[in-house]
Length: 377
Image (cartoon, rainbow, N blue to C red; front, side, top):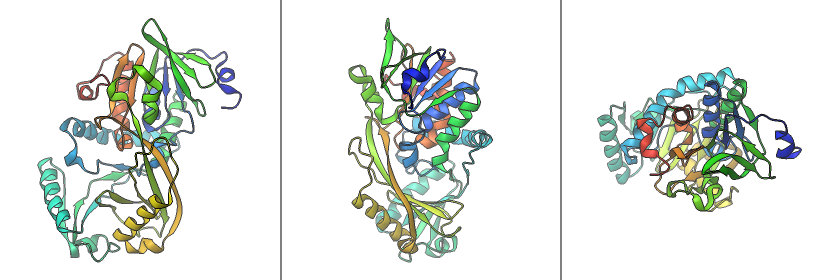
C-alpha cells in the first residue's frame, strides 16, 4: 500500500468492524455490514478477489451435492435463494455478474458413469430437483459439440452461474458505496488483543487499527494468522486450483458441462472456462505445464473442437481447505468472528455467509442454520 499502513490509517477513526480478507466472502460480509449501518474497513493483502475467488468458475451449485451432509445442503440452498438479489445489488454498483441459468450436463462416458448417473438421478429427484437422463441423441440435440463417444448425460436445467472474477470487486464496490473503506495491499500479521478480547489488527508494517469486531475472512491464511491459538476447525490449508480460459464464438458451448472432476463453463460472450486442478502444494499459486496440459486434455475430451480453440489465458488461485471439509462461520472469541474454510464453495455460499456474520456482529447471535459450522465445533 503506497505510503504504508501507518500513514494510511493516521487520523482514521476506529471502525466498528474490520473485515480481514477481500475474497468474495470477506467482500460480501463487508457489503452486508456496511448496508446495515456499521462503519466497516475491509483489508486485503493483495488485490480484491485475487485468490480463491479468482480461481473459481462461478458455478452456483455444489458439483456433487449427494456427497454433502444435509446441514451443508441446507446452507447452500439458502444461499442460492439469496443470489439473485445479491447479484442485483452488485449490478447497482456497476458490476454485471451475468447471473444466468444455463443448466448443467453431467456426461455419461462409461459404465461407472452410468451407475453414478442413476445414483445422482434418484438423489436429485428425492430432493425435489428438476433433472432428466438424456440418451446420446437427446444429448447431441441439447449440446451438439460434445464428443461423439459420450453415451448420454444427466441434465440439471435449473443450475446457474455468474462471472466470478467480477463478484468480489463488485461486492467491495457496493460496500464502498455503502460507506465502507476498502484497502488493498494491506496484509494483517496479527490480531490485537486486550484482556481476552480481540480489539483490532496489526498490519504487516506494524500499524495497529482498533475495531469493535474483527471478521476473519482470510481464506487459506486463516490458520497461519491465528497461530498457536487456532481452533482445529480453523486450521485452513491452501489448495491450488488452475484454470484455462478459451475464446470461442458465442453459443459454441451452451451448457455447463461436467465430466468426473473436470468442467466447462460457457460465458455469454463465447469464452469458455475450463478447470480445475485440486493440488495440495502449500502457498504456491503458480500455474504449471502439467496442470494446464491436463485441463486442456480434459476439455478436448469433452468438446473436441476446444483442442483447436484459442487459449486467452490461464491462472491459479488458492482455495481454503478445512480439516473436516466444512466452512467455519461464527464467533471464535470476544471481538472475533470467523468466515472461512469454504474450499470450493465460497462463490456459492457468499451471500448466506455474509448474512450469518451480520447476525452475530449485529447482536442477534448465531442462526440455527449456522450452528453446524461453529468455528469451535
